[in-house]
Length: 111
Length: 114
Image 1 (tube, rainbow over the protein chains, first blue to last red):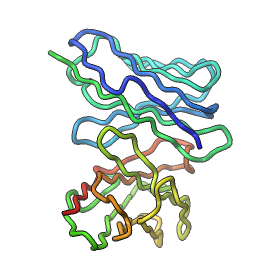
Image 2 (cartoon, rainbow over the protein chains, first blue to last red):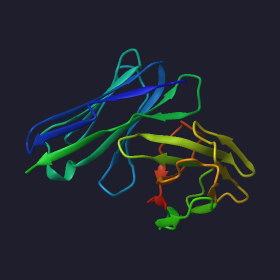
Image 3 (spheres, rainbow over the protein chains, first blue to last red):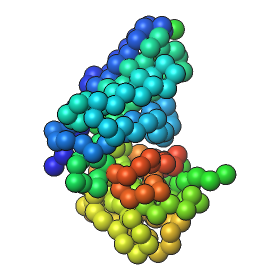
Image 4 (cartoon, chains in turn blue, purple):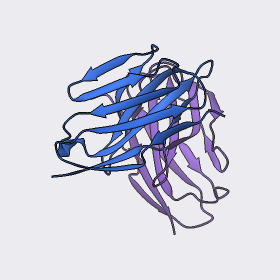
């Protein structure tokens, strides 16, 4: 079945440093979504990418979808303590209807 | 306010007991889902339903059962056949079908088996 791998599993950064999490799929994806889960909370949708090579920005967050539609990344510029949480990618395989989640990257920000 | 309501938030169960987790949405979404989350793991799909009176097994359906008698409601029963039921359970819904758009999650139900 489809697998979505996400690295790193944990990341500790000093406030103000940048952060990147990477997502790789074993199969071509029709789309990829990103979610953020705050400690003790539930996942909240951030964005969906559909097109090959697509890049989208939300303030300090930059999302990319690879040209082959098998990988994606989330980059946060100048992290803040409010960025703390676990970031999940979730992909839908081409021709599939099931969303498969990566295991997430847990971000800690040291003030 | 539109959203998804899960209850109870915390639940304790003795081994051998069935327990039902409630999930209600007033977003008028067609699709509803149940996910299980374990520490350090991603979200794993238990069951999903795209329309009333229809549901499909996800990746880890064994030991669980669901029903979808109303559009707004998608309860999950954790049966005694589930070998390791202690986990955080998340219900979600989406406007479109599975994999087609944003998932809206409830606040979750944390089940502990004593």
